[in-house]
Image (tube, rainbow, N blue to C red):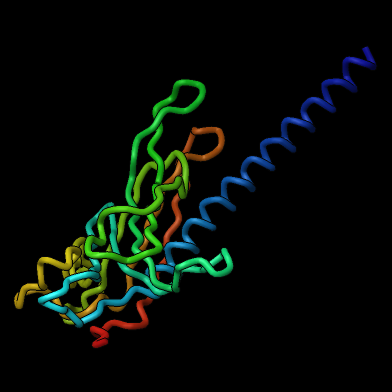
Length: 210
């Protein structure tokens, strides 16, 4: 009887420890994803330069409610002498996949192309940034609107994502002052949702002419 009681106590302690570890890992993964998105969005830029006769590169900021594509100066070169700079094409979007136990989940994906080219929305490498996501929402601050929640808009597009298509004169000419990111994920026990919200202020709001 004493052995059973001791075993039960240790078993419960191990379950609590494993749950706490899994919960810590879950928070760490989501916060890392939010930090990475914030850093890259804050360093977004748009180049006003467009060579009509030799369109080799494009820059754009194409934001919608649940996906965002941009060109950023936040890329970190990790391999010595690699043909990379601090510029990169980055996209965030949701994609459904299947887990090892057969569950269907939605993951937050990140696409990065470290060699900006004539199409910002194509190429590069895709990786999972956060797993089992319930909701991803991007909101863009419109400074010309009244202060308050009405100043947040669900869409923002600047520049041209294809070098062969120059920006229209009717398009926006500046980046938003900041982007609000809302990420809702399932908890470890999948009984409730965890909500994370942050904002990314954009440093270079005006078009860069180079």
